[in-house]
Image (cartoon, rainbow, N blue to C red; front, side, top):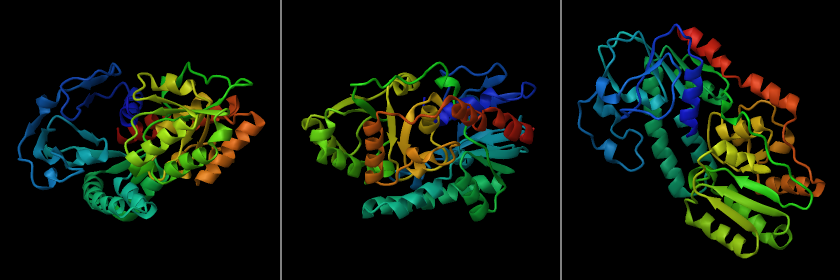
Length: 365
């Protein structure tokens, strides 16, 4: 399951039992996930009708609109409507007399704006500007029709308030109960340190920093090949990184590729140190919460770690050299810096899903 689906399931799990909640999912006639008893799944075709043809904007590459504005949803039976995520605000509503709320997760325009500032490649920056203008229009509509917008990022809520003058509220991203029952493996004497890149490292989110880090591994490959091994989850989506990874492997550093992990939490638990060299993003990263909440050690950028409670200085790196210095710290001391049990409990308390019952469901009721 992706992070958006996991978050939706967690929020639905704490719905007040006396509420009658229907769930409709874009173009889904059925879903595989088990829902809480008081959540009713409604098939897409029961409420939605295609009423418009796809326009020119919908045919543009990397378009955020797709064919969403082509559908009209009859919402006459509902008193409250919750958009999740924000782009569902593009649906046309029929017979709407309901109050509308949006769970934005993160702010799309803010992410594209960060990308524009942080990326050096002119083509990527042009894409960021293009995405920013589209996302700005979508967010504006969502904020304009919503009584309140809820986010899992502090900066995202501030963006909604500053740009759209929206009533925006930050609620901490919950830690998924899917990690329960898992604990990380031990790093025994004589074993290589298992470094893990846990997916999502596309050109847009990680290029530059990810490339620089692999370049440092290559430079020190003779020394590191007997000290580390690398696990990489997902597809390598740009050639420049693939070539560097292949070169590193040819120099004797063991790299283990997994295209898809059926059980993501189990996959994480078999690693020693999670690396998340993100240069762009927003909201809160489910990978970060799951890793730290499980007791795993982790190094990530401030973007990878933002909005997460209890992060220590040993967990944050902004440059490839910073990452390498913190990896060396662990190798030289043969020590991992995962959170201690009492720190994990404080983390789980701050990121408890019950905050969504108190500050979301109770508020909109």
